[in-house]
Figure 1 (spheres, rainbow, N blue to C red):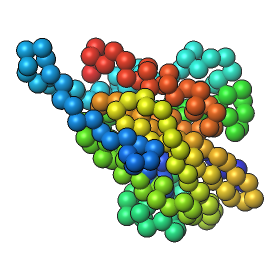
Figure 2 (figure 1 turned 90 degrees about the vertical axis):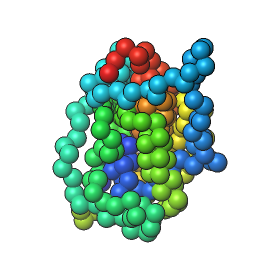
Figure 3 (figure 1 turned 180 degrees about the vertical axis):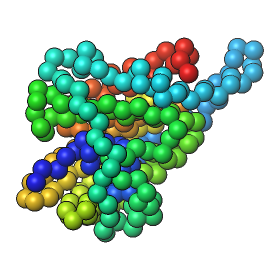
Length: 236
């Protein structure tokens, strides 16, 4: 069988595997510590905290085919219904619970997502997810998920009756925002395997999650973050 990375892994799925996975994002490894700087106006008064963006505003900031270039086609979002998921061999993941099914989304009030296939290749996929909430909530939740997922180098996910072995590896990521996390996940089942890279970047009240083929994630993560976090003052 082929491991469907856009289902088993969108950070949704990461979250998906939040429950099926172990999270990561420690500041001492591939993550960075949250910024504690408080914006100040020239008159010395503290600036008001940024307001989270709505789901509608986030949807306008998703990448589209014109951003990615020739050869990309948008794919429909998978159904929200998935097989029951059980995590075996990762206590940290089990503590996160299993209420989020594989393919589900992170539990933030404002979200938007899109996925693409490059040149029709079944193993050339990239998915983008945007979330918005207060900076503190985003930092705690995403960091907790990434930390849990990478706390277990190898574990198993039982999706319905199909056992999938998951191997995780923290990787370094360039500083693109206030905080960033990145990991490589290898999904093995039925004698086949898929390698997926997942990078999350928080800038203020927005978190960008890019998942998919490692080369495509590396190629598009900067433009994804730039589009998702630009001109925030004009949208709510």
